[in-house]
Figure 1 (cartoon, rainbow, N blue to C red):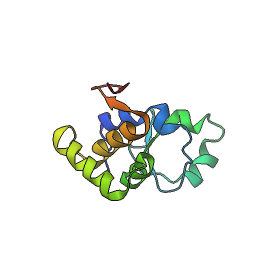
Figure 2 (figure 1 turned 90 degrees about the vertical axis):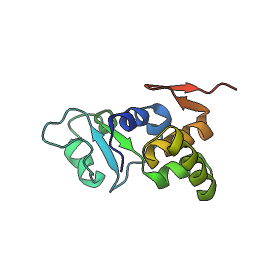
Figure 3 (figure 1 turned 120 degrees about the vertical axis):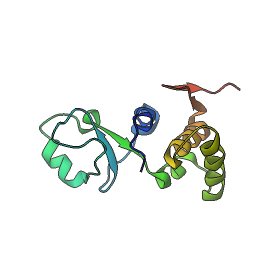
Figure 4 (figure 1 turned 180 degrees about the vertical axis):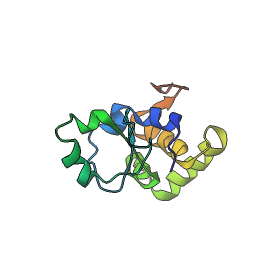
Length: 123
């Protein structure tokens, strides 16, 4: 699972975060909690109770989608998603998640990553 700074930045956008139903066993990035290691796998069932009084869960954590979730977001079959990821992995990315999020954002939102932000792709 990619927990790099780049992948976290790529995930921290409305297109990825909005509408996601938080589930147990997913990966999240924590904003500024010294007692929790960044990128630690958490289980939301306990987090909603623990953080309910501390503020908005979605403002404190960034969801980091895994490959299967990225494939679902893309709307592509597994075969087409995998083929697109392989093409991007060798050219632009070092991990399947970095490739997958680019495929999902291009397919669903027509956006590309430009070193530090998402921008609409040229037609």
